[in-house]
Structure formats: C-alpha cells, structure tokens
Image (cartoon, rainbow, N blue to C red; front, side, top):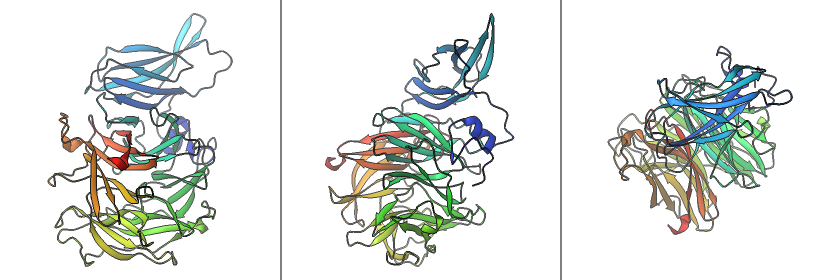
Length: 491
C-alpha cells in the first residue's frame, strides 16, 4: 500500500497526529494531546486521553486539565487530571444536552505558565445507553471528518488469552470512509480502551485462524479488498495485501460487511459482494484460501465469479426495483452443502420483508460461481445478519432486525432467532426492543444493527452499531455498544 508516513510501519496508527497527516495532509496541525475515546452514559462521560509528546526528564512542569461545558456556552468546568492516569469519568451531567469537551496541557517554566497543547474539541450527549459503550462519535464531530462521523461495521473477537477486541469503521455517506478503530477489553467487556487506528480500512472483519489475528477489509467504500495480520494482539499490524483490486462507487467494486470467516473442507471461506448502490445492485460470491496457506499472499486466495441476482429465480419477491442481495454468510447446511445465506433487499417488493436467499457453492471447485438454491422465510432480511452453527444445541443462531412496522425503515428491535436446518427459522426472544420499552426518543432514529457476535460458553457476546440519544438517524449511528446474552440456549 502507498504510505506517506515512514514513522508508522504496517497498517496501524497509534498516534492520531500521524493519521491526520496521512489521511488529510491539508488539515490544520494538531497538538500532542488527544482524546482517544469517549463513552457517554447516564448523566456521565468517560474520557480516555493521551499526550503523545515525550517528556525530557521530569514531568513536574506539566499540568493537565479536562474542560467541559454546554455546547456554545462560555461557562465551563475545569477538572485537574493526573498525568499517570489517562482516563477520567465525570458525573452529574444533564441527559439529552449537548456538551463540548477537551483536554489541555499547561507547561510551567519558573513562574510562567503556558498552554502548550490542547486537544481538538469533541462533542457528546449524555443519556441512558443499553449495554456498555465501546466507543462514541457525535454526529457533528468532525475530528475524523476525512473518513466520516459515524461509528459503523462493528467486529468482535476473543483472543487466545481471553482479551476481547472490537473494531469499527468511521462512516459517512460520500465521505472518505477509510479509517477503522480497534478497542480492547481485558475484563470480559466491562470496560474498553483504545488500541489504534487502521488506515486505510473499512468494512473490516477481525478473525482468528491458527491462533493468529487477521483483519479482512476494504480500503474504502468499494476500494481494494485487503487482508493484514497482527502477531501481538492487535497492537501492531502487517502491511495489508490486496486480494481484489479497487473499484469505485460509480462503476462498482468489492463490497462486504464483518461477515463470518469459516473453515470447511480444508479451506477458509467468506462472502464478498461486487457492485455498488450507484450501479443498482451487488452480485454475490465467496473468496477462499487453503487453510494452511499464507493468507497474506494474494495468490493463496481464489475469488469465484460473482453471481448477479435474477428476478426469475423461483420464489423471488415480485414488484419494485429490487436491489438484490448483499452481505452473505458462508455457512454449512446439515447435509454438508456450503451455502451463502444472504440479506435480500426486498424494499418495494411483494412482500417487502421476510425473505432471504440461499446460494450454493461447489467446495470441490472454489473457482466456480455460486448457483441459486432457494428463497426462504427469514425474520430480518433488510439489514446485515450473522449466522453461526452451535454444536452444543445442534442449532443455527442469528441476531436480526425483526420488522414489526413495515411503514418505516426499522432496525430498533434486535431479535435472537434459531433454526435446526438453516431454512426454517424461529424467534427465540427480542434482546433489544426500543419500540416497546417506553423510551421517549423517536423510534425511527434508533437502531441496534449490523451486530457482530460470538459464542462464549453459555453466553453470546455482541458488538452493535447503536443509534440512540441524538443520532443523526437510525442508520448513521453514534455508538458502538457491547452486550452479553446470558444462557442463550435456555432462553
């Protein structure tokens, strides 16, 4: 990949100043103090911050403070910070109010003091949040404007030592869409901390293979399909390699979400689309590589020809100008058939929700395209969903955005569903349900969506792209939240 900053080897940036210089060279110069993570909650805010300027000798001449105030007001509160503790939680805030916050370093020399560095001003809004906040970006916070203003595409993985990693990209329509954030939890998801940025990185999926950590992503929306590896738990990353060359919004290109990467019959498999919303649809395919191959060698990967959606497939939804399929799950049926189970964009059709499509793969010939399998009834086809097989229960499980109000674009209910055969799905329970909990916010501006999740003993651990407490809309979220579904098999 083309890199302009030799100070960062590989894919990752731990110092945001280096990220800014690379991603937006025309941006104004930033000081050494930065807010790395925000986590607003009920009348409170947790701030992770860092000073990236190394000190020469004693730091006794440095003093730090956090300042916050209601947005646009002059009156502010100043809170002294300890240089040794780069996290602070402030309380007694007003829910549903807009605030500004920043961190300042003051240097002392003799009797004089000067404000040596001040972080960019960040925006936040306190409020009740379901789950635990991994990260937050206010919809009018342009700190990462070169990529976007909305945390999206969450991915979650548990490392061999028990540490949880969660990633998300930074999205906004027609913006750069080129930066991802990795956060880390060492206490089973109770608290989270910033690790680093990956650039260029979008639509990324973290996964483990042979006890090694990988990220499969695109460089940007419809950019090159990339893969990189970390050998130290996500702290540093290799230079990514290109599996599929970049396309464009206008002509189409690689498209994905954080979808499962599975091993079957000696190969790794995962779903990739090709197309764009601008061209009107996405064609469907799988990429695969031998399980023992060097995954960073592009020659290891086989990309099958992409299959276009056909309105004449038996059982297809009629009417409307349907956008077809995207964001598929590579999953194995009980009879051993590898399929791609896909989101079916049925908006405007008859019916306009409640269907998914299954395409079949030829595992003996990974170079051959998918073939049509069947249309199935499915509760959450209008948003990305992830499907995994659980050997203990002998069932497939998924978390979906169940539709209860077809008159709106609805992602405000997150429902656990299961199936014995991958074709007939049953509702287990609603896990997050904003519409029926009596909360005051407009339900059309709330979403628990694009969740990535994993089995963890008797529980399911979930990372959600959550829009709540003043998100731009249900789609452009402002939180990544973490959730635990306890004893899911017995619900």
